[in-house]
Image 1 (cartoon, rainbow, N blue to C red):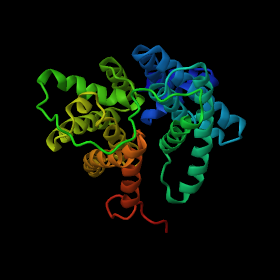
Image 2: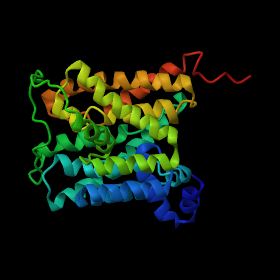
Image 3: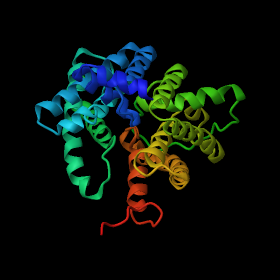
Length: 319
């Protein structure tokens, strides 16, 4: 929407860049949307909001000091991984003063990993997306075993053999709205209906198609796991939805030309993201690591690589 772009351009550059970094978590290069996301995080939990703020500032400042592309920094591309790093580490680790330093270091590393992956993936025109966040957080979560100042939190899954689901049930009607909205909120680790609604509002300001893709992704993340007999508690919390949300937005709105065909491809990608998440969760269970957004990253990469081989989505060769 034009009014949001006007406000975005009117903001001081440092503020604009930081807020765009928050907005880019959902592919939105818009400071107004980023502000809505950040306010939503503080509503969901002050610590999560503060951790996201520290993360996005640290990752963006690191990119600037290391001399990375000014255009990429200005677009917020070096901010969104740091935005995710902060709430992630505060969710999965016990809180301590040293954890703030941990967040800063991890956020800085996420920018370095992003720059490296952008260089590797550039010839293939494939985005690194949230893979730096995933790789960085996995390393920092495993590293806590070596440091006495850090302790794994109760939410971090303990290492063990994958458990068979036994508590399958029919989801009550009143849980559906909760599950659908939390599926969007969980992209930034927020277990809140209000946060999910605010996230969708922020996306819609930039693109109605993007918001529809997000809604489609969270719907798939609720309906499909129910049909497959997944754990009802995880479905209600939106834990099967946040990856399909990102996948459908990436494939159906951002990285392929928006069309009916790309929307259909996004729906297929959304369904397969659910299966990919279940598989990765079982694969990572023995080492006690969460999947984070890697199911989205892996599915998106495969679909974008495959799209380049298709007569329907490949860009025509230059003459």
